[in-house]
Length: 612
Picture (cartoon, rainbow, N blue to C red):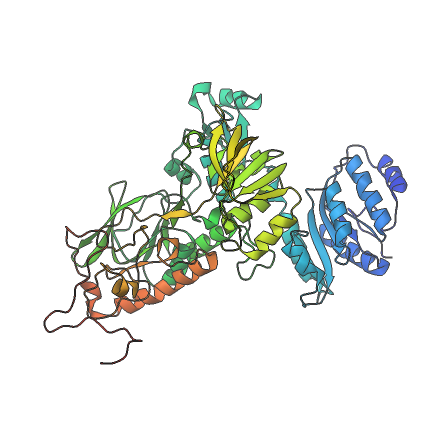
């Protein structure tokens, strides 16, 4: 067996008694390194894996391992009794049940399956990843050590987002139930800014206020690492402190993108890279609903899933590096026409003239409509995944309302922190609205319960949420439960109310695009060509993502629509009529009326219609 390098202070096969003796002789005051624990019944394979890990990670982690199930559990039990941290469990994939028992001893450790090169459906990695019994997998043999190092570095770095940061860029001081705090934490979490929260009810919160020269009435307060303070900061103040642009300084552009979710940011990447002068305007910060998702498992290219905020952050940075101008905390209030161009008006009074516009403003969560709970928003009640509140749910009874993928992802993520998570759905099943991999994960999670045909009818609590009243829709019986957190994800409403009447929408407010304008009663299209696929009833204005009728509600589909929209923008700009879009009639309603044939002009025939 090769010698285990520094950091791998216990060799394979050494039992708990020897380990305690080793600890007794360790240097007093030496730093306690988190443990990477390896289990493999093959001694030679175990020694090789431990040596590889120690070479790269031995300065920061203690690499330990065993080759028998009995010694493995004994060693991990000993580490748990001594309260020594275990960062990662790397186990032979044929011993999933042993990994489950090990994880019970060290529930915060990341679970990695070591599997043989077998890409059939019977591989243990398939079942384990589907049912949430493992966080990652690694295939052996690897071509070279760097393949393993890259993978393990990713797995170990994923730990940092789930623990309190060692360095705090910002410190938030406020009352524990302050409803503004979730908004501030959410923004910082989505932008991956390390922060700490210090309640006024504790010792450090008042001391931080005193050091900043502020009194208790000034909360909430955000204190930067450089000592600068913000009292009850607005979204614009927060964004400016984070170093992003909050003021549009461009008067005109080729393409104005409204919304920085997956559709808008993807369009910005392609448009800017293809030479279009591109400006992105976002009311809050980048990411949209996708940015709040703790883990997207079905996005192509990420076999273990990807955090929504990280995916959107990278896409935003990519668009910026391509040359797109991105402005945060700027609300669009109107879209007008002026001399053949589209004019976007912003809440700060400024305006942007654009040759084309892409509306990608997404949707907002539909309200539950329970008055007592609406009064507790931000104080235990949240709309969406509220990623910034995850750590605050530690050991609480948490409820999630919804039956879609967002609700399923939130449940599985919260299950890693809460004592118990209960999913509440009004329908008879989850099969119609939720992906199967999420349903399987929910059913396999030991601390997740699914209640169908159940709705929330009331809440309880003074300053913070304390309980819920649930009603069984089948029997009509209601009962109360204690609750420390409620996350509501019951579908959305398109963020399109601000659009002019000339942009046709359906009865629910979703924007009509493409041939829907020819098929929808009451819609109007007056040009001598068919509308382009994602074009709205206002020529040169396109829509993509959840704000559009017929959108799939998946991140990948929104990305595809964003990319497609750029191709359509090019096509529109190359047409002679691109510079002269029809001005809207001021008296027109939300869905303009469709005109019939006129003298000397016919409505364009659909490409799939038979010739007359």
